[in-house]
Image (cartoon, rainbow, N blue to C red):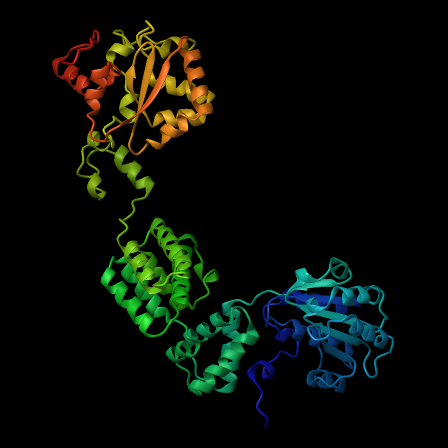
Amino acid sequence: MEYQVSARKWRPQRFEDIIGQGHVTRTLQNAIKNNRIAHAYIFSGSRGVGKTTAARILAKALNCVNGPTPEPCNNCDPCREITSGLSTDVLEIDGASNTGVDDVRELRENVKYAPMHGKYKVYIIDEVHMLSNSAFNALLKTLEEPPAHVIFVFATTEVHEIPSTVLSRCQHFNFKRLTLIEIVDRLRLIAEKDGIDINGNGLSIIAKAADGSMRDSLSILDQVISFCGKKVDEKEIADVLGVINKDIMLAFIDRLKNKDSAGIIKIIREVQDCGYDVRQFCNNLIEHIRNIMIVKVSSSPEELIELSRDAVDEIKRLAEGLSMEEAQLFFSIFSNVHKEIRWSPYPWMSLEMAAVKAVHVPSFKSIDKLIEFVSGPSGNTEDMGEYRSQKPENRIKAKEGIQNTEVRSQKTDFQKGEDEGLQEPQDKREANITGNGNGSSVNWDELINRVKEKKPNIGSYLEQGELVRNSEKELIIGFSDRSSFLIELIEREDNKKALKNLINDICHRDIHLKFVKISANADSGNIGIRNGAGVDINPLVKDALNIFGGKLLGVRKIEER
């Protein structure tokens, strides 16, 4: 007997044999039962999902001697002729090679003739989107009012390229991409009938390589059988397809989780020696990291991960030691290197550097745990790394020699007034701008708040600065080296003019503004004392007041010699 490839040998011959397209087959069967058969259909979807097969079965169901019937018998002469492709009443036309208007004109002439044997004349046009615009226009009238005995079935993978005038004259059915489980179950059934010994993981590799196409999976199965014979091994399938074994990917992520740089470099070298493509390796790695994220967020990850159940269980084991933050960071790192290696002269080295970078990223603590630790009792026993060894008052430090804004916001007893119960009325905010009420100094925090109300962007710039000099006629605002770029933004003509007008309106006097850089080695305490600004909130002064139990009565500037 002449050999037939599996895709032809196991092509479905009944609606019930079509997998994954129940919404299509049920609609067509009900239309036949209720005598509501349309004169034109469009079957769209990716390759190998059953579009042409469904069209042939529909033609058999319409022309069967028992029909029209929801299921063809496959035993009568019309059914057998259609199955073998010999029926004169079912014409399959390749749209890619019959694209011209002359081909459509010939079709228009032929539709006038009645079917020779069956009840309907069925025209199946595959890849119909390849027809020219002129051909589509020539088909419109026939498509709108065809003879009663004519049925058109158009199959396409690019439905968006079909003119809307054609779409509006047809019933459109969208064929779904097949899932990995659907393909694996079908392959297992075919392998059992053909006497092929292959396990579930091997079938999963084939189904994954098919990318949702049943026809592609059967073609791959034929190729694997030709290489392996009747007993198919999972490793041999990976070798035939050039697929990186999942165990390698799982081992890579395991070493990533355990911070094993040497082990990761060794795996990358082994993958390179095996001749695998570096971009394909990155693709697989990114997909496995994505699967870890799915495992952590979904209660039923098996429905969202296209792997065998054993592989999903292995991913669950790996996910136990990784946080969501780490998984997202790994995804970002390897996604970026995947883009870089396309143009890199040293793609494998780029991958190695990215892997080492991912290994040496410090362990994440969730924000919730940090908040719980900081706000909890001092006896908290949770391991929080270096945070545990620090006293609460030492956890917040000035980074560039300028006191942190949290220190700025604290108020001394002198500012609050000797009477702690005395509260300032809310409607006297203008008075709060001057620190002591005589107009000689400015309350920095209140000034920032007022500026932010009018100009939020300028206010946010000022928040990064420090009040270095505070006099009746001049404000000197300093920025650390890291924040010095903000000086250029503030000194833009429009920003500086707006800020000066705001401060003049708030303080009711003309104040000169100056912006300077502050060295990272500057003593933040001495800056405040030397310029007479913020002495009452300076940490050195506060410590002295607390030690000696004193109160700040005034500030006197000492001339430098």
